[in-house]
Image (tube, rainbow, N blue to C red; front, side, top):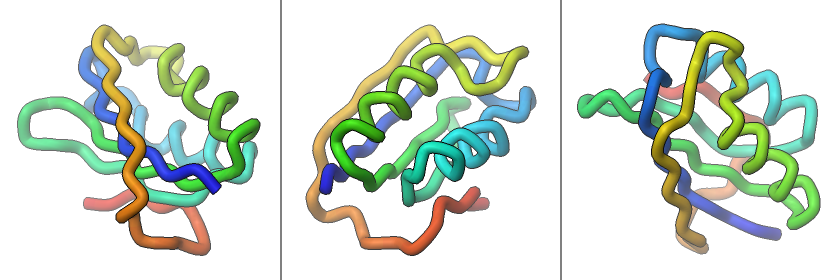
Length: 91
């Protein structure tokens, strides 16, 4: 099981990015969270099998929201991410 923390910048707030990220995660079978940050970025904690994670990461880089645009993407493996049973939007 892979656990990663992603931070994305660009046009990622106010365009349905978190909601669409949840839809993509649910469809692929990824668990975790997505939340807006005060600096205008979005942070995603994702847990899933390696093959599913690869697909999810590519969807995030391409922006799951049709009106969003990712201009900067960082990702780190983070084994400390808390296990979850679903993927949730965090406020």
